Length: 345
Image 1: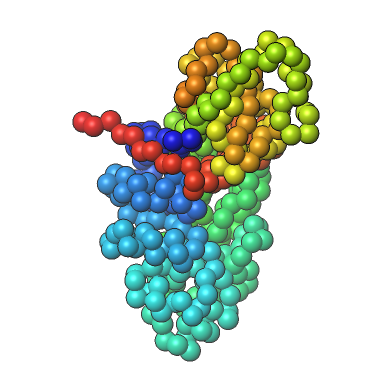
Image 2: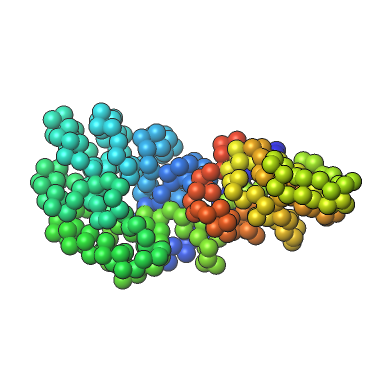
């Protein structure tokens, strides 16, 4: 095995227990889109369902179908707009559908498709959904089971978050709708005074431990194998484009993963890996399938180094790559083996 993503299911359960101290299990929507943020649909779904979560959020028709094949009972909401010609099949399989336009509503009415519909209400994200003045007409035509919106910046802009909250509440409180949901992971973590207003809480990144905090544990550890070690007999450039020059006597180890596996090339010459209590710098440009580190005599052929996980937080790597933890987790490619670990009781 050249590279692996070790998925610690005990850490997942720990994170769910922390979350459920504040939010009842029956009000949690576990967001498992994008292959459960790279962690694997099936195992993550099964653990969440076993924990007591019954509502799941996905992004695509295909994702919903994957989850429905695994389990016939769970409630599933596709959080994105989908093709209207799929409404009948999705409704037949008891999959909730997001509605974003009057054209979609007309299709439902003209084809008499009974289903569980959630209205997307745009409170300031600008991504999809109805405007405030359209909601009344939508509800007259559709009679939805849910209404939701999405916070743009719950992690860093309290003023705008409260603006979106007030906008959502002012509309949603007028109607008797079963599911009203606005709070994402950061919203659920920071805005306790909002809690009584909602029937569902959409939890994603906190569940996977992708936030730089001591409260939650990382579920994924991305590791790769040392495939080659050499000691330089003279000063030498390392990697493409001669961006790093190593010195005579330096020990160079090659790690068997690269940007095709999900290690961002932008981490070249500024990130590190972890092995047995030590951190080793990545040197030279990261290649498609491999990268190099400045090693020492403690590094052995066949060792697996941690790229992110328990000792190097994924958000630390994301900050270095000028991105967010979500992107790094989702970027771990399918050719990286997922290895699931759980302590047997």
